[in-house]
Image (tube, rainbow, N blue to C red; front, side, top):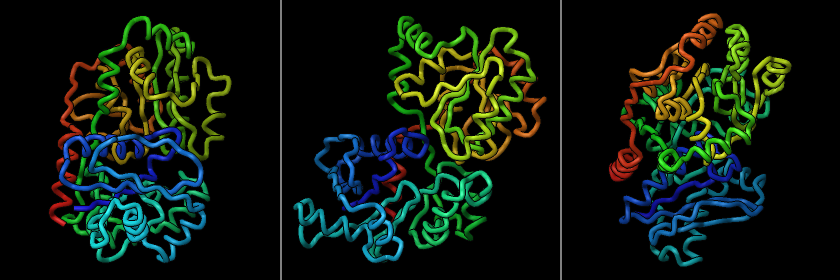
Length: 378
């Protein structure tokens, strides 16, 4: 079977949850499936780096159409992405003249038009843009309106979500039958597990020095945006007065949107420091050295950072909402994302404690096998 995959989610310079899911799924998929032929499409006028899978059944199809033009073509269904991919693949002799793209997989929302004859699988990571539009900038809200997620989801032959919580949201908000929506859980990255095993004391000291870390710190790692409720975490840390006991609150992650209020919240806040985006190679060290992990997000489709943090046996304080119960299982401590006193008390009581329970029922191998099974049933 010939399967097209939209590789555009991997073009972001700083990889966040969507990019992580896309990369790890494909990494496992290409290791385990040697029968199907995969055609990875991306469009970029500029030079970009993409993973080199170097598999006989994995083919890269790149175009250099200016994105504004390409998006208009997709928006008005003037050039279906699967047809475009198919034509280029045939011209480059990746496909025979009589062959077609049978299935097209969109790992994330984007400007996408697919022919009715081609089976379309759409991944919806969450519906935060619909349920809480106030968390997004005007530009992001307009982007979602133009992309039209509801129309894409209804037209798709199958929808994938990373949690049952997101599946319930999709079924309820878009009126889609549960049989069409499939939960494919993400898992820990293989590279993160390997880096944990390879870390040395010398490397930990290097990271401590690089980021000027205190011996005692509480960690938040994620995109800085309103949905993550970072101002709340800062207020709770100030209320806990742990800074006067030598603790820091370290905020790590790329800047998202509507960050002005977030950045202002920790100006002159004792012990609170923002260290910027942290490369994947350095995340294990940050987790290993932390005394506590906080993630009081208002809503998550899944939530990679808490899953990663508990793998390092750090006590996690997470919100009592959305997908966190699926991610954490019987580990961590659930707090209200609206009660600052509760979080402050939890910080004081849980800091320095280790998470003994580390149940992890997630596996990329299982997820990629389920993806192949889904393709075969369409």
